[in-house]
Image (cartoon, rainbow, N blue to C red; front, side, top):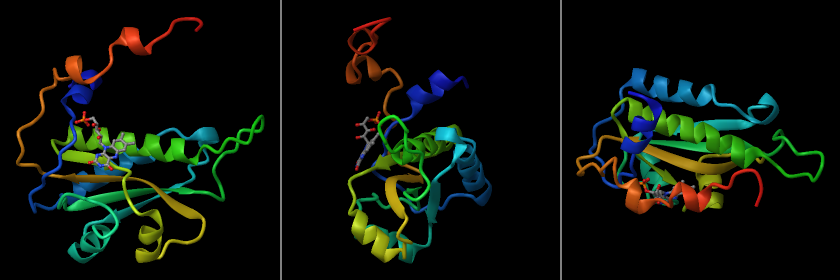
Length: 172
Ligand SMILES: Cc1cc2nc3c(=O)[nH]c(=O)nc-3n(C[C@H](O)[C@H](O)[C@H](O)COP(=O)(O)O)c2cc1C
């Protein structure tokens, strides 16, 4: 399947069965994140993999994870992320987000469903999972098997802005 077909096939699932994720498939997803580009190749991130029921339950006190059997909490390392010298802009969120996107598409590639979550209690997650002070959760990707009706790969005609609305050539 080409990348555009895969990207159009992906949708956010908010209902999951209890079926766990196969270990080889998990490794494939994590490997897709590992090869993601980061600013200056610093790779200032950690992925906290949560699949034990007790820990998923604990995570659901801080975020709505829709009963998914796997949560990947992508964290930035604030001690090591690249600061743009010109203005000091910190790039850890961007790096963590590219890693998350790679893993999300890899999950789709393996026939799994997912939803990206940013609505969470960051401080509670840090406390619940013993975060060191330099790590901060940026994104949670939950992954699993969904019994829902797949959203149409053609839905973007209605649900996304057009290229004319978002792309500007050469100059504003
Ligand atoms: C940065 C980001 C944060 C998101 N946060 C949440 C969230 O906290 N909870 C949720 O249910 N969905 C969340 N989503 C999923 C979006 O709502 C969803 O991707 C968007 O509505 C488009 O729908 P689609 O993924 O089905 O194409 C988030 C997506 C992104 C990219």
